[in-house]
Image (cartoon, rainbow, N blue to C red; front, side):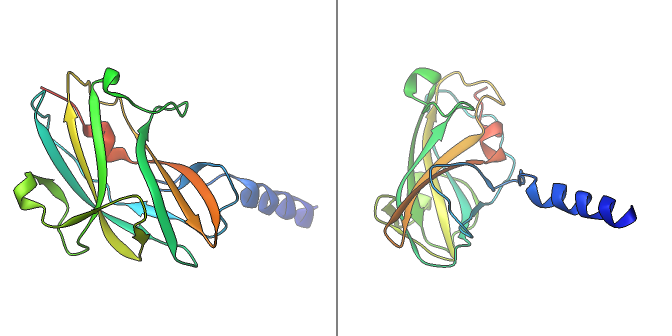
Length: 168
């Protein structure tokens, strides 16, 4: 009886979904060991209508190299966030040595477009955004589309830093 209970417990644990921060929650294809980890940190309220740049460490934890196709913000149900929701965001990949934080454009250094960028073990994610009357906790998901070995993947991640975005 003890062995049966132990097997049931192990079976239940191995089938549970991983809901840790930075783990994919939706996938359009089986991604295997691919994972993106984006650093979380707290933010202060921002002025409405101003443009800011958030820089965060982003680590690729896949077995093989990946090519990034797009990054965007989505609602809980997967609907893309548009300017009607009060946020306009563009994403870039920056120097891996740039420290995380909020910067002005002239302080972030060189960056490249997301489309076609190779995901490396370590790089920085740069989010350029403008907020317009955004309440706290209204955003928390980021969607990445990428290719590995010719296969396309689209996954959404919880990025709790987005919950901190708000206007004062």
